Image 1 (cartoon, one colour):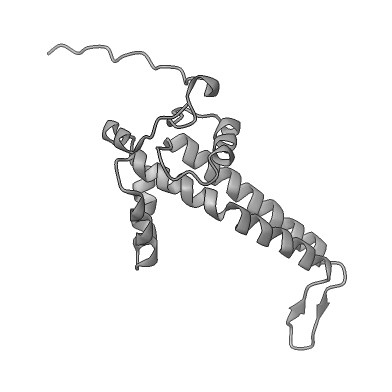
Image 2 (cartoon, rainbow, N blue to C red):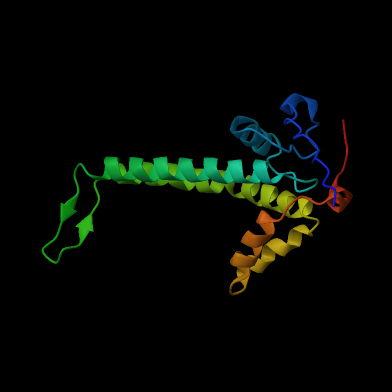
Length: 160
């Protein structure tokens, strides 16, 4: 039996060399976050696994920072009643508004990148709606883990 040496790994392509309509394979953290905001409401095309998961990490980190901010701002002036329930201080509501703004401001880009990630796995974007059925979120999560497929190029819409 003869074994061939596998091809050497290809270094990730610089973000500027890849057009915005094409998926950026091997995206860095910063490049992925920038692309999500640049393609804010673009449901066409594809998004690589690295683009998607860097965005998920960024979104989770921002959420954690906002939650900690809510905790820190809510501690001064907080009260605990005799039955053990607590009432946060007035600063909590400031952070609560920031959390609400973050959630509302990122719903569309989050859905768009999920849609494009499904396209990259050669799945139709409306598979997202499986999240509304029992265990559908788990199915969609598994779909986001699938590798890229060349057939997914059918979802690309090249433009200048």
